[in-house]
Image 1 (cartoon, helix red, strand yellow):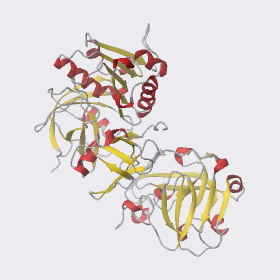
Image 2 (image 1 turned 90 degrees about the vertical axis):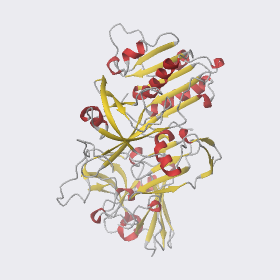
Image 3 (image 1 turned 30 degrees about the horizontal axis):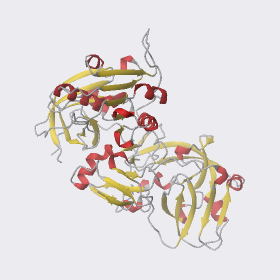
Image 4 (image 1 turned 120 degrees about the vertical axis):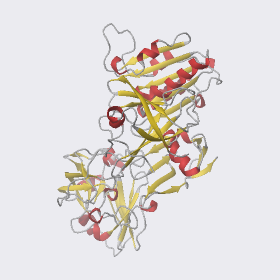
Length: 200
Length: 238
Length: 86
């Protein structure tokens, strides 16, 4: 039996449930940098975003990507490590625009990134105004440590699904676990049902 | 290696934000200079936090750790401000077979500390004194200011065979003639033992400090196997 | 070999975790990277701890050598990036 450490308590108390914060989270004004590897520094001259698989794969250079219609959105983000950050402002291209440019009927994607990170999502969770490839945060170009030049932004799922340094999506017939999912993190990751780990 | 319950014997304030905690550890198997231990705290609601701290005392001395209070920390504010003599904490150790120094190791000793990286090096210095070793030592200790130097009085009393060189990076006392900048190649070149003397180097502190200093030593010709490193991660602005 | 970023630590920091997993002191164990063949002691490897798990990488080529994830008091250990762990 571990002794109780007199007077010790967690630093961040969980937020009162008030509709905006999923269960088990606390709100932070900070934007923690959490990375599983070194920060890539891909020059935009070498950057492309691709959608692979499907009937008509597509690829955009940085210049082509910047020419696509973009949106500025304000969203809340929720990390599985329990911090939530409210009212974050991003600018990017909606996945509706990107997926709209290709022909496919696959139900899943695996997002792939500079540095080798991957994460899996259902296509349905990328459509209908739910996801972006974001290249600006808080009014400035997205910093490398936060995923720049561009990252996936899927705020309705835990933030490990919003893959940093994203370079494309591979359309798939079946759902395949990405980096963290392989080690036991939830395949879907809905913070509102507290789906942190497989089996939740 | 099991977790065991230790009792806090006494507390020593080293600086305004750094405290040494002396412990009674019933089943302590002894330790080597440079090793660390893991501390685990459990809150009443079952919440647990674990951190690693270098052992500040020499083999044979009571187990002690020196903790720096991090402003945004969860465990360090508790250990440096709340913990009292008589409290119990869980720990396991000693841990680490790489970053250790024994008097039997030959060659002059070069110790390079960035901030609280001085803690395991201080254990090495105390060990050296206790066994009466005459291995020549140079300690380069980089700290933000004189007020933030840990073990200041003790380091001044180390005596023959030990040279302590300070680099105060942010603020220096009036009349300071020592280094007043962060460690760089020129400074390392000036303080390092010549390669021909087959020195052994231990570098400990924030990651940026360790990376830069270790690279400078290798650039000077130190064989990488003779440069031991321990990185503490980020500890705030230099 | 690029300098590690602030916040990244080394194998010394996971000494306790390695004892838990392997039952013995491992920081002086020598690893061989399966991707580039570089060898080195565990203590000198790059260790990333983003909160979801612990990722240990080769200093020469950044290949993932080891991953440790602790979920519900079970530790998942992946050593697939190693050619050898002595």
